[in-house]
Every structure is written in C-alpha cells, then in structure tokens.
Length: 165
Image (cartoon, rainbow, N blue to C red):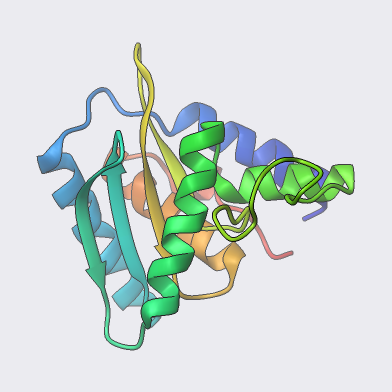
C-alpha cells in the first residue's frame, strides 16, 4: 500500500471503529481479545488500555521487556493528545516530511508516533482513552489492535486491515 492509501485506510478505521460505550468490563474483554490475537500470531506484546489516564488493563506477555512498557506509554501519549491512532499520526508526519522534536514543541522521549495505539472513541462522546500494544514492528502492532477491535465490535477486519507496506 502507498502512504496515501495507508492514510486513507487509517482514517476509515478511526471513523468506523467506534464504541457504543466503554467501561472497565469492556477493557478487560478487549484486552483478552488482543492477547488471544497475539497468541494466535505467535507474537509477544505488552497491552495497555486506559481511559482518562486511568489504567484499566495491562498485560505483558512472556518475551516482552521494560522497553515495551515505555513504547506503550509513548505511543499512547500520541493517541491521547491528538485523538488519533499513533500510526495514522506518524504516517501523516511522514507525508509532510515532519517529525516530533524541539521545533514542534513535543518531546520525542514522551511521544512516539509509531504504530500500536488506537483511540477509544465512544459514539456521541468522543475519544475517552487509548488501546495500545508494543512488541512486533509498528505496522504489525497497528494491525493487531485493529484486528482485535474489529473482532470485539463484530466488524469484518478484511474491510479495514492495512495490506503489506
């Protein structure tokens, strides 16, 4: 897929993958779906689901490290600040030839515009949190979260998945 195709598909994902409601039970259930998807793919990940800065679900699979926890935090910060998926935000930066840093007033040690964090958007409310994973390469991180949300919301992932880069 081209960069423009990625940006358009991610915008469609962000528009269609919205929740009717979201609470602690939903976080637990979705976290388990993400874990199941990661196990099925044979990829170890750290999973973090939070609302309003409040952690609701965290699980680090065997094979992850403290670095994954830091990536989760940094990618989640992008989603919580910009109300976008971290991969979508990063793809937009790439298209513009821009980066986070002193010129943007954003500390890259606190924000990572890499794949793996997706907004929890509740219909009629807006973005209330972030679902974030870290483990495989960033495109795979993004696709893992999207596939799990699709499974949870009963949306056909084939309609929304990003193809190979």
